[in-house]
Length: 93
Length: 170
Ligand code: SF4
Image (cartoon, rainbow over all chains, first blue to last red; front, side, top):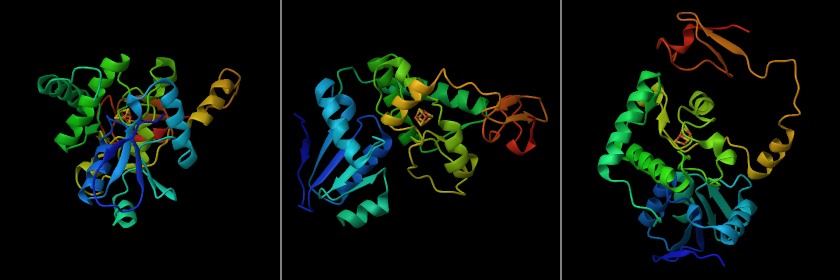
């Protein structure tokens, strides 16, 4: 079972953020999504262990084989890897 | 958020002073955005508590040191990323160009091989016998410092002259 944290906001389509609790670009990505007032789910992969970690890594791998962070999955359709401010703004808007 | 006590502002501050001094004395620059930089260093301190080594804050450490050696800060990817993008992956170290504001700092692509590629590389290591050098060797014409890497460093870590004073030696 993968436990996601939910952040309330406006519904701008399903947003799932895979992040690390220690990563500067992940922090900037969260701040940007919150700036755009979108509701989203996130998980800090570094804080997970064992089976749950494996499951999440497999989920990330499907979108981003390099398993790097932040990986933001938008509407189960596309993903943005890294803090790409303009791309994220455009996709969430 | 974490199972460990957060490092105190004092711990972060003295670590910042130490890393900054080390960086500058060997010709590297820390990101001038002190708040961002201290957050990263605080994260490295958290990783020392979690794993026992300075795992890169922006990469998923396995917790097994021998699998994470390449991402212990400063990681194996810092210098090539400084050459190609003017910053390390986390944005902790930046080039002179970015420091002087001639280029904008942004998040850069991940150079570390994917988990699958790393798994493959593990099996290859030890079997690679080659008579050719894997990297060119550069020589600082001022102090004679030699280094084997794709391009010379921005600043000689020994005598601090600029990278354009290097010649290709081998
Ligand atoms: S990317 Fe930067 S902060 Fe991360 S380990 Fe490498 S040098 Fe350190």
